[in-house]
Length: 113
Length: 113
Image 1: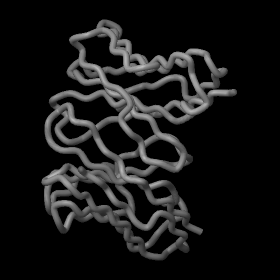
Image 2 (image 1 turned 90 degrees about the horizontal axis):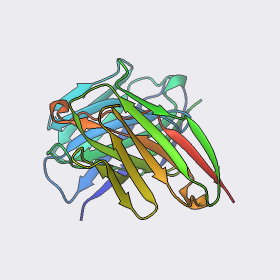
Image 3 (image 1 turned 30 degrees about the horizontal axis):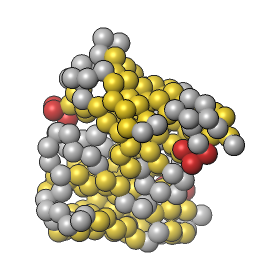
Image 4 (image 1 turned 45 degrees about the vertical axis):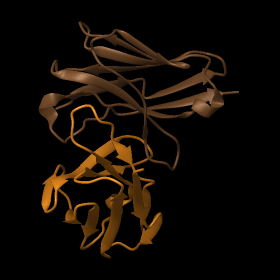
């Protein structure tokens, strides 16, 4: 069966510090991978998505970046965090096909102080 | 460009009542209409989905109603329970979207005992 892991689960970082969030998927091959941010526990803002290794599409201009060094690994990074980067970060995957569901990870709660 | 409009933003229902959440869309190419359910501190998960070849789909207490001419689909929760308290997202999709998904703004449902 497929599983998706995210770590860390929670993170408190000072403004200006770097960030690295990792997401890995098991039990599937060549998934589409996604990073979302959810502020105030509400809407899902798509940040990045990837349809293959090294292929990253950015949806929102910001101080975040994403990388996909391996087929089932997706990393969200920042060189200098801002207060506005606080939120709940969700990684998700789905396999190709237009009507396949999207599976979300457990999320990382990031607080920037 | 707001392709999906979800309403209401929040909803309070008494236990045993009916919860109704609506999703209006603009893109007539959408042909898959899922609802996702998210509990606090967790990632969203697929709850129920419908294809436009039927106007209604029922799974237990959850029903999707689809109105193609109005470009709208709704989630009905019958006999609402406190355990249904969560945030609900619609995420209509079409073949021309590729890997990118679009989510509604979310509806926070609270079922009072």
